[in-house]
Length: 121
Image 1 (cartoon, rainbow, N blue to C red):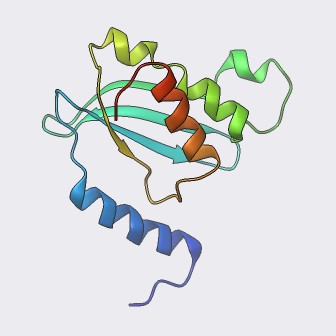
Image 2: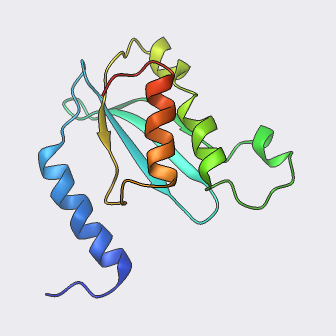
Image 3: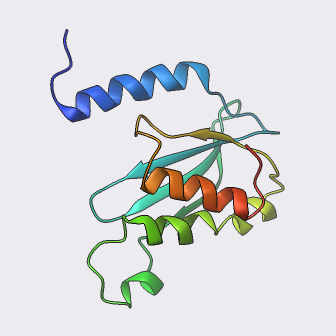
């Protein structure tokens, strides 16, 4: 079957990436999801199937600003800097899962902000 839509193509890339990337207790997987309005990030230990920490731009504090969309580079930078949740969970290094999205723009901003905040990957 030939993937024709953009979603089908991203899903094929996502599965190809997930075959190679596995999160462990020492190095959990930082996975991203990008909707039209918000960004979602979570740290997952695939060995036990547990989510260690999560963060999103879909919070009351963000919505108080009155903006319509938070799925932009500035929202991604603030989301990546929220790695204090990962630090409190005892995580120092991670495996980055871009979920089939190209590594530029918002995805790159999340990764760089997480690196600046102290996560190693």
